[in-house]
Amino acid sequence: MAQLFVITIHLLLFGLQILLVPLWYLLGIFSSKVRKRLVFERMRQSTSTDRADLSFEISSQGELEQVAPLITDSLKSGLIVQLLYSSPSLNEVIIKMEKQWPLQLFWKRLPLLTLFPLNTPFTSNSWSWLKAPRLFFCRYDFFPELVLLAKLKGAFLFSATLKNKALSGFAGFYHRGLYSLFERIYTASPMDVERFKSLGIKSNIDFYDFRQIQILRRLDHQMETLRPLEKLLEVYSRDQRLMMGSCWPFEMSVFESPQLKEDIAQQKIALVLAPHKLGEDFLAELLVEARRYIPDLSPTIIHRDGRVELGKDSSVIISLLPGVLCEAYSLVDHTFVGGGHGRSVHSLLEPWLAGCEVYCGPKTHRSTEYDLIFAQRPDMIHIVEDPSHLYQTFLESKMKEVLLDTEMLKKNLNEKYCKIMDEFNA
Image 1 (cartoon, rainbow, N blue to C red):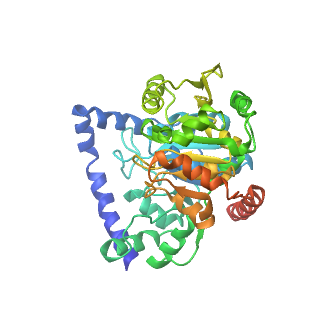
Image 2 (image 1 turned 120 degrees about the horizontal axis):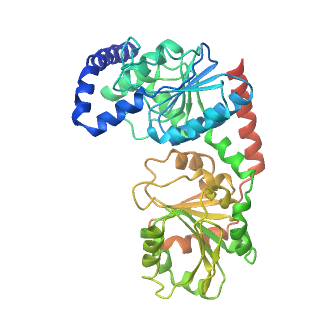
Image 3 (image 1 turned 60 degrees about the vertical axis):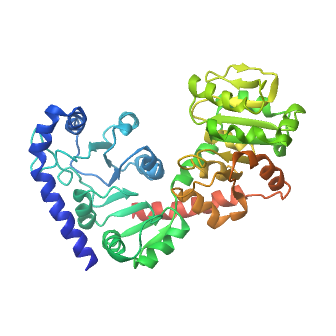
């Protein structure tokens, strides 16, 4: 009943979407945003394929990261893959992938405004383009055309979560109908398995976060780019190192701690700051906030090109090295991840899979990664209510000598991943 209701609703929305196509073109005359989207959707790949082995629908860079191992490993095995995507932020990476896998990887931009049953120079649809027997979704893109395709294609859903969603009443009824359309669901956290079961979705539900494979593969390949940071940390034992990854200016109250100030002065601690943004303005703002607590703070700065600018306070290191934060976490055993005192905490999986104890602010309501770590190792994730309490929490935590067997974790994750890939290739 719930499934029939969802299909009916999306059929009606699908029909309305088709009727609105002329209106979108009319609005495009007056609205630059609509016009930009129309141009985006009309750009087509120069080559096409009459068959495909796998099709993926991806909404953003984050969702691509979730299923990247599945896509790359399928391409390496010689399969033909189609990517349907909706965000312009993916343009650069998908064009790069297309060049790397010519005649194997094919892409199409999701027609949100130009959807029509017939392909014309001004309209398009997804169902006539998709050639694979099955469609794989990541997380939450439930536009009418895609919902109907999920039913027709026996779709799989990856990184599914019901966190912060109503599981009772009308919303629960709708969600039950929606998720029952999928033949198989892989959840974003162990807690989500129970949430789906409580919703009434009990068959073919399993937990597996595919981004873990992506992170582990990055950690296996240390980069020469990290050498300046490695060299600076060599004089400190691992229990004397604390990193603040993706940190923000409002988290610089960490320097309010008298004990931290003393240990910095005596070089008993190496505090590594990896700002969330690497621009000069953001760095200046970070330093202004830090100097509210240590007015003459003079940190060592590793610039984007690897050049090291030595400061008087050499035990405070600011790393502006781009694209290596995930790998940098392997250089420490304790990491604070920023964002949790602002809108929402950033990626917690990267430092944890590197073997770190992880600290973060209280804003974890959007983070399924927090749920994942807490479900498996609650002793390795710490909520710090105020950044000024971070250093004391770190001192107390490191005395417990908590360890993560990263080799065993990697072995278990890879074994399960191989089983899933065997299912894909069956």
